[in-house]
Amino acid sequence: MNRDKRKIMLKHLEGRFEQLFEHSLREVVMPFDHIFKRHLIPLCKILKWFEKNGTTKDHSEIVKVMTKICTRKLTK
Image 1 (cartoon, one colour):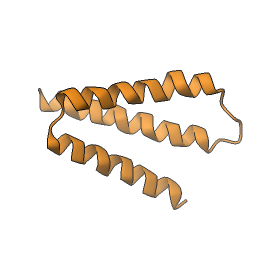
Image 2 (cartoon, one colour):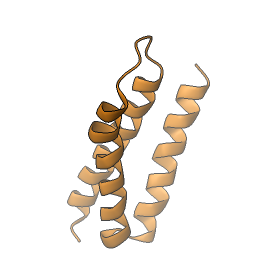
Image 3 (spheres, rainbow, N blue to C red):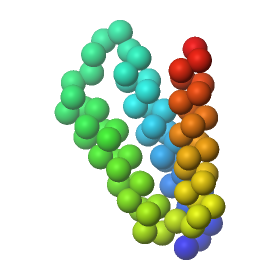
């Protein structure tokens, strides 16, 4: 699989995961169906894509990206 495609998918994953945190930290509670349809389902699809097409290095990058976001959001 093309490395550029995997980089794009990793950026999409990063954005979706970041948005999931942003929505959870808002003062106004977002409807569950919005979070489910707009964030969780696309995030799951991206993870499934990586499971099928990704390399070991890609999987390591996913963990690094998600850990970076968790660390940044939880230390604010």
